[in-house]
Image (cartoon, rainbow, N blue to C red; front, side, top):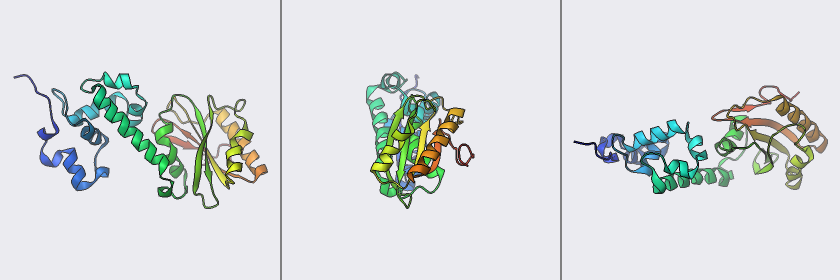
Length: 231
């Protein structure tokens, strides 16, 4: 007999993602299980959880799935336009929630807090983007502003432009963040040179530069933690 389409109901009750979410909460589920809830059914030889695992392996994680072109996702076995749209919509909702709820991230107290604010989106960008997180005197996030798109190097980044939003918002401090599309967050010599220039300008403007962070694929680096560009 040829294999039929695998459904979530083929799993034991205590292994079904929807029931596990109901009883344990969404945070208890793996990423592939959450994807399975969106997909609902699998394909011959694979249940929905296994399809989710295959997608994550193919795209090298959720960030890769986020970056994937809609047409490419549609072409994956067992997906198609409807399921691709559901996956893209769910990922976009997660991105918007992270941007829309500053009251839930009351303050930035560590590089990890800053990374949590921007890494999800910035790790998926195909070009380098430089952004500035504006903070008040209590390190509450005022706004995250995109300053520049393109190669982040000391000859192209205009430090004065970087501080304009901070001056307008009367920010007390900033955290500079940019991404490496290669996925490797190791700071380059230009990253260090830009950091030194930004810190010097901040001292003149009485705006503290708390950190400069580089976002990669599933990893990030704090230049301040590594003592790069910070005295």
